Length: 624
Ligand code: ADP
Ligand code: MG
Image (tube, rainbow, N blue to C red; front, side, top):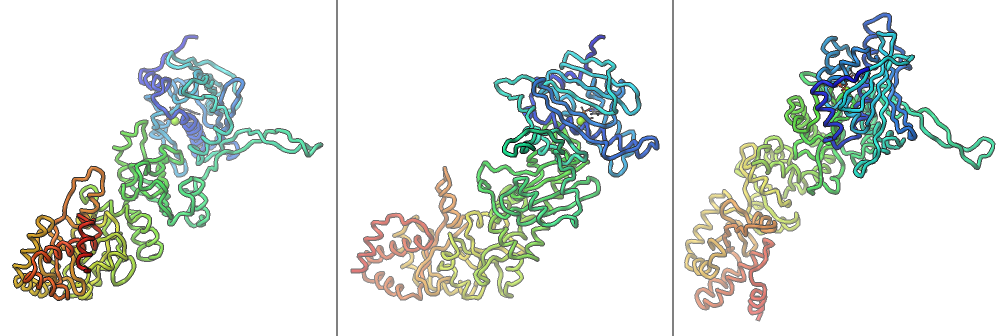
């Protein structure tokens, strides 16, 4: 009997498989199990449409057998089998995918679905095997056939002996190489792992005889090995079950089994969508950020399944960066999947699902904010920073999605509040959303710049994360209300401003002198309207704030940016009398005063003083 040649495309794919561009060799088992499961699906389908065919649930299973001595791994199924022609067509050529044509020929009824179009498929067996033997008997034929191939050279088909309908695939496992330990694929633990990882939710039992140990009957102290048939897969994926069948513990258990996190999740989102693309999602919001969450090593992504078969461990395209903390999976029968990740990225259905997932996460978080405040705050403590980065990054492209989810500490409520809550509380005469930036709530609380705004009875949001001000600059407005820093040049209080302008005019020479002393360190020295009890502070002019200057200068290869600073003096403060006096009588003293006041203002901001030794000496000089 002569060896037949593979069709051109098959040869190419086979070549790829044998020389394995595909590093993930272990997926061959997933592929063969999927094929077996498809074959059983087809039997089931036939039983629905053909009275002569019965479907007895117990008769349908997949079996894996490993023989270390012979180095063979056998995958047997009790599915529909293949006729000689089908063997030829299905395994001789890749272009004709059997699952695909079956799908087209028959309208698929509920409950029958066939995984097709994987792209990798049957030939992946050649990644781990140098001789593949397929023995099969079709439900439509009395004869059985054997297909055998060592790879690219071609394949043989001949009649063989096989009693039952179904298919048996025997892989002669390759010898170990330096890079790859093929032996592993004959180990029980490895097979178990692979089934759990990729095929846990195949609908039919995947059985294997496993070695166990028990005390001997006649001598309890000694143990004997025995073999027992075990089903390796759990068959029904939790996400396919109905929500009302499931308890919180079930979800939590699944979450831990999957190693999504070490403690129970904060929130579970389990939903089914039907429509243009049908899919199920099971998402988790962790209670705590993983230890590597804010590092480069962290990899976002959801597991992607096609009909219960794992296609990808971490499909990054399913999650936007700002929701990268979400764990979980998506299962869809509608995805056409392919070998390359690049193609997947351009998949329209995948994009569609990703968009829906994003909307879903957002609406669930908003719901939590409204209905379960405590939980949301806990969430926000862990992941709020990620949301704020999300507002800031991509030039604010996602600010609309995220703005309602933001929270900041409030000066009046003494807890985290949302922007919506802030705006709803704004006074009639309040034009802006006020904020103050600093390292901690305690430090911001004490900032002199907050005095006037607090005095007016207006609420102030405290920005204590580095990213806060950057995010807000991107947001610019919320519900048409502009954000305003309590340190910004003008606060929008006209009458107060008039007053301080007048004071500044009246003391023009004095302030000019001080500005002369401080040179470029400040843009201006002027009378303050925002200070009530405190003597001095810095205000800032322009887009770059003092907090932003601090943050940017802490970054590696910083550009040494500088915020434009205005030194503001409280002209109602006792110390101003001394300044005025010095201006009249002792200009050297005023020089020293100017420096001391400026340095004090820097300290209040948490900025380093330019010359600490000089500053200390100046202060001592004043004590004398
Ligand atoms: P796909 O599963 O995407 O169709 P594969 O390369 O995995 O592609 O398989 C090719 C075809 O070979 C299948 O469509 C099916 O018709 C046939 N086939 C493979 N394995 C089996 C099996 N265990 N039982 C019956 N038919 C099979
Ligand atoms: Mg397949």
